[in-house]
Image (cartoon, rainbow over all chains, first blue to last red; front, side, top):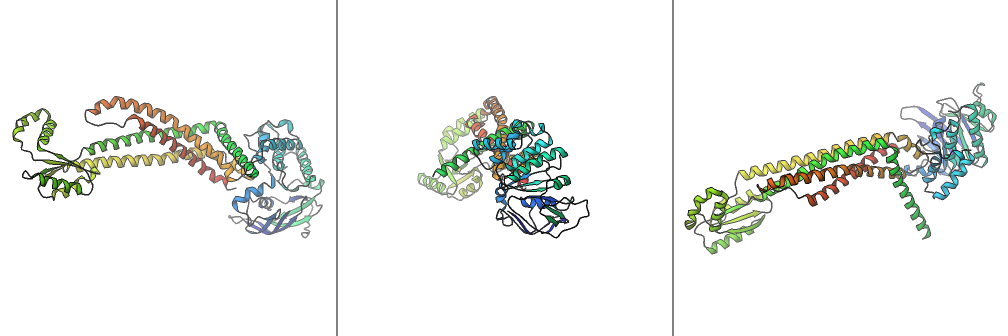
Length: 236
Length: 306
């Protein structure tokens, strides 16, 4: 599903964000990516949907190599990946409905199909009755649900979430996790970068810990593990 | 075949979406749109004024230049044969467009007429015409006059060649300079217009940079993002050109009517209101649309690299 082979990323300003990442994520897996700030989590995630291009190494998503991906093919890659952002990234002047529908307009879906899929998805995230609201009129948790709805409405194989609960209070965060679990249960691969120790330790899933641009720990049913003395287990 | 029809319909639907989005975007960004349209309006008004000035200066200059002709006086002893010979040689000269024979009687009449009241003094000469027969020669381009005149001087039996030497060269200098200055002004103005409008549009789009980024992250292709901006830029340009077109038509009509009578006395005419106004309107709409689209698309380009 997602494979990284010896991936390196050095930013033009000299920051070495990734220093030889090897990882393999199976279809349908739910993976937490943890690590201190500046450890390379975000770069790791951004490389998957090609917002950042690795300086070296190869990434294979869904059997397709991103290294050879042409600039103009990037949009088509992103259509197979749902992305959820910490800051939601909703279009402020569009309603909830329009925001979710946008992901389908982009792939030129017919209005009929769009209506059906959008309403289904809004129901899944529990916002069916707020379809006509503008993002500003919603709470943070609700906005994140819209963002999730947008990421899954075109039924992608992978959902990548970059600290989706980062801006939310704990209670709301749990609600978001329920939605992400539901998505995972439907067979979608979920990769989630997070700082939320409680969530990682409660909903036990595979944990990939990144520090200094390397994977320092990779456990099938891991824990957050940053307050205990980190005991680096060799990767897989 | 069915698939072809299907994708065709899909393209059409997407296109209509882009057009709708372009219109909506104008409304959503109300004040920014207003600012952009105003920028187009002001600059196109200036462009239009200078364009009309330039075109009229050009027309008037041409009218004056067209009056320039070479008068070729023949030796008084030239007989009909020699005269025909000269005519043949004149028509054979490169860049000569028209050769007209002016018999001495007609020459005298023209002279008397051109002198007005004072001409009557010469009226008594009618029986004893001192003028020789002549040819009036016109060149393809008035600017060719001096060169052609020089060539004519070499022809046998030609007594004298006159074309207002000195004065004509000065005239051409004036008309050429005014044309060039006008052209430079227009070009400079167009560049300023493009810069100003593109900048205003850029500001409105920079405020939407985040939107564009989000669109890209959701999987929109560059083309998909660009189309509505194309439509929007086009609309900004076209809407911005309407006011200048209206104002210029009104103003030009007014000026034309006010001035044309006075100008007739000096044998000069402004360009007639129509079709000039249609041409002007078309040109301004095209310039407006072009600048709008150009400004809009160049501004978007920066944000597409996500």
